[in-house]
Length: 262
Image (cartoon, rainbow, N blue to C red; front, side, top):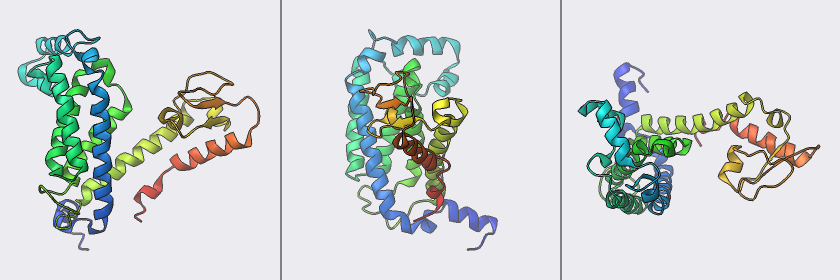
């Protein structure tokens, strides 16, 4: 490869010089992303009115009115980029959920993936921007970041198939790998930096059947398996518990294999 600046830029950003050996991983990733979006919107259908509706816990309308009074017309859109500026009624909230679910299903079916990613991203960003205390979860930011990068990762066209004509842009592929790396590496660093002696002494047993159990987010219910969080704080030597914790560290410190190609 010619590493002259212009050639390097084309290699990173020109789809014609994209990663042609990543067609199947891209296809699988976008189908999985569609399922994740669908799961997010599906769960919101049953709770969004109670959370952000006019009679909800934290009404989006009250929040947006306060933002509008504090900031100018353009500044408010930058601070809270959401379609709920048009309306924050329960019908609007549910409509965005159903629109997001429909678009995510079309993404799973590989129908106009870029357009469906735009719709999913806009709908989910609309909720996160107005959710206030309910939008502080790491997973929300992770999904938004992956969804935005995927706008440039996905193939164009209504029925692109494998997208062989437009392989994945290498810059978008790297950014998705970089996000994956940060999630795992920072999760591992957080375990060490927390100062929790259970982690440092390899005395935390994790059950991989739950997200919270896998991520190490635990309540202190020492000595008992928790039916939701799925963990146990060990009060004595336990080879299986220590082995499980070591595997967790090996997985997260560091996940260099992400950048190792095949």
